[in-house]
Each structure stands twice: as C-alpha cells, then as structure tokens.
Length: 500
Image (cartoon, rainbow, N blue to C red; front, side, top):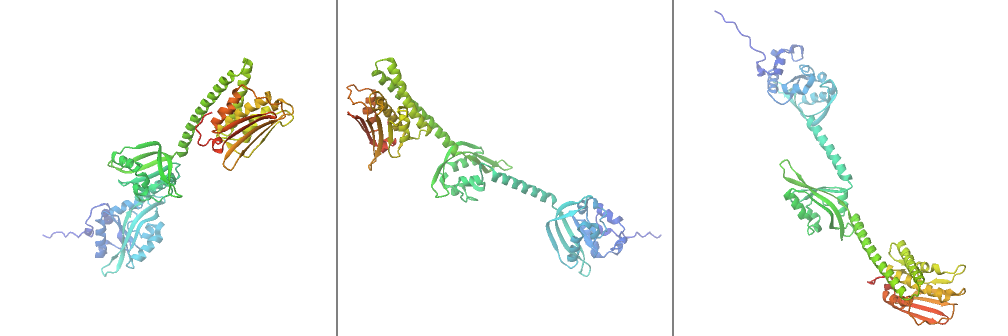
C-alpha cells in the first residue's frame, strides 16, 4: 500500500501566521521581479522571516527596483497604502518621495548605510498630503555571495512626539514672550538655593541689570540676605505656602555706582510643585511701587503740613483779633482793622499757594502786600533789592509787618499825603546778614505816639522774635524809618522751629 506524498510548504520559512504572513502566502510573487517564492534565495527568505518577527516597523526593498516586503507593524504606518504596497517597486509605491528613495537604494546597494533623525516627509497615506516625521535607519541586505541585494529600513514614526515638542516650544515661546513683555517684574528660582532660572526685563531693571542667571539668590543679591528676603524664600520652599507683601521696603544696589537705593515693592512668592506635590521652584512676581509709595508719603506730609498751617493760621487770626480789640474804641474800627489784617494774611497765603508753599520771592511778596496802598496815578511806593527767596514762615511774618507799616502810613504818615512816598529796600551783606528798610518821606511831620498799639508790638516784638533778629523804628520828623535786621538763614526758614 502506497502513502500519498505531501508536498512541502514553500512558505514554511515565514514562521508566522499574522496578517502580513497571510498576505505573503496569497500574493502572486511570480508577477514581480522576485519571482515565485519557491525560487527565492535563502538570504531573501531569511531576511523576510526576520522582519516578520520584529515588533518594530520594518520594510525591505529587494533588488534594484526595491520590491517592497514589510511586517505587520509597518502596515499600520502605511495607512491606506496597505496592502497595495506589497510587491510594488518603492519608487512607484511611494511616488511622492521617489527622489528620496532613489538615494536610499543607491546608497544601500552600494553597501552604505543611512540614518535620519526626525526626518520630515510628505506622504499620501490617507488620500491627502500629510506631513510626517520619522527616525529612519537603512542597511544593506547581502545575497549569498555577500554582495548587497536589497535594503532593509527600520521606520519609527515620531510625528506625534515632534508635534508635541513643537507645541511645547511654541507655548514656551509664547509664555516667554508674555514673561518678557509683562509690565511687572517676574523671576523663577529653583531648588533650596533658589537659583535664578528666568528673569524678565523688569526684574533685571529692578536689580540694576546684574547678571544673576543660574546663581543662588543669596550670592546674586547679597544685600537682600540681611533684609530677610532669602529667609522668606526658604519659608515658601519649606511650607509650600505663598507669601504676599504690599509696599515692602527693600534696599537694592544701583547699576551706576553700586550704592544701595531704597525701593518699595508689591510682590508674591508663589511655590511651584512637581507631580508629587513637592515644591521645586518659586515664582516671583510683583511691581515696583516706589513712586506710588513716595507719592502717598508726600501726600501724608502735605496733609500734615496743611494741618500745621491751618493751626498756625488760626492762631495768627486769633492773635490778630485779640490784639486788635485791645487797641480800638468802636466796633466799626475793630471790624475794619481785623478785616484788613486778615486780608493781608490772605494775600500772603495766595502768593505761597501759587508756589505750593515752597516759599516766595521777596519782591513778589512785598509788591503783593503793598499793591492795595499804591496811590492811583502815581507810584507812591518804590521797591528795590536783590533776588531773595523767603521761606513760608518768614514770608507771612514780613507780609503782616508791611501791612501794619502801610496802614499806619495811610492814616498818619507819608501815604496820607498826595505827595508822600515810601521806599522799601533790602540788602544782604557778605556775612549773609539780611536787612530790610522802610523809609517814609513827604508826609506830615512825625509825632511819636506814647501808646504801643498792635502794629508797634508786631513790628518791634513779635517780628524780631519770629525771624531771630532785631527791629527798630526811628520817628524822624521827615518820616518814619523802620529797619529789620536778621539772617538769610532765618528768612529762608532754615533751621527754624518758630511758628507763625
């Protein structure tokens, strides 16, 4: 009895039952330059079996035409081109990159190798052009004589990673741009030493344009250590709790000379955590509010100064009223005198207000105080003297004194006569001694009064005391002469603690 002979399986060398192995079994290889499988060389069979076992996408390009054989992993990469790529010539199979593959075949069949990292190509895997990135490694496959008979390509698509990295870079660039363009100062410090990783232009400006990149905070900004700012960073790093400060004073080195400069800042130290919740970095963000704080302090100073001036003015008015009432006989006389003296004080206030109470020009103050006493049609009062700046305190005192002198001149002296005149002049000598003189001429013969009124007391007692000087009235029959002697320091309100 004879047993039927079972023909050997020509595809036994595949050693695989996957999708691609099934396609290879059913494919008509006789229609390709490779010919029937039965005539394949051992090297071709071995290379085919080897790539089928690999989980990595591999394609083999056999012969000068680069006939394509690939594994299951590569079929996923091929997209809609699978399974039509099987047995096709690589130049035709991937027509859109024919030139690229021509070079691959030329190098590979010459025994060379090629390697590409994140190689960008445009493929038609799904019917439309698609940009892809791949890691490609090409090596020659030898025949039984050791000569290159084909090229094997390991293909790892990196499109997703490349696009993700690109998105990350773009986002990083966007954040960096926002970081650099931010109107507030920003910095990032990392680790327990608080090394500077990033700083924006506003932060660099704040610290005097010093190079702090990569340096620990204590080393880069040594002046802030004793001020407690590094300790605050330590606290945030250890506790994981943000710290905020408003209008915080800090002394920082100036860029020009390295001298310490006072600044005020609003800031927050914000901890940055890793995926496990541990603090890895601290984000510093804030604003230089020095000008705002100084403006607020100046405003408080102005308010305090205003309160001080109001109290002084009220005290002056109270003194004017009480002193005036002692020397008048009627209510009408008292009302007129008080009103005129308060108006004189008001005119002096106006001059000082125009100068923000920083002081006043002596000539302007004198002319303003005496403007109401000038005779219409002629210059009855002349004013002369060098430029001199009065302090607010001295300006008010001299303005009131001039008012009393002019009022007295209108009632009894030179300004009561159509031909009378007053000469007001001042001078400053080499020793910075200030001298102001009031001289009347052309009025009635002067008679010295026995009673010392408000005006006399102001001129001879109060004014010298206020200006730390001396005063004298000469009742010359030809006209009253008043002389005030003080110092430039006193009339400039320097080192003065007196109040009007």
